[in-house]
Image (cartoon, rainbow, N blue to C red):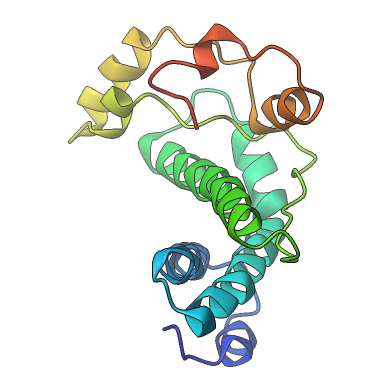
Length: 168
């Protein structure tokens, strides 16, 4: 996939494809840590492609996120998007740390995307286990990636809920 023509993938799928965002994020991660200059350069391109794909997903993320009483399938979609977006911020920081002139600054997405959930919720093997784990999850649901990004960029104190196991 590192060598695959991104335009061809995007042309064949006019709408958001979560697998594409995940794959380009993984390629960016691999390239950023491979120790090879060309792969590092490719990592920046993949990071931008993943960010562009996730930006295309914003309307779907917002509409699915506003539904109360989400089902397991919807939660998996939203949680996966949240984790991809969170990792894009981390990769952006890594790439910038290794190459201060890199053009990989990922702007915060200006909508309330939930922070990744606790691992106990993610590891549920069935919808019933997932529902029980969600009920037991006591994390603050008012914290989202937008408010967290603003706190980081403004050097404000992070909520305690973001410094434990759910920390990015």
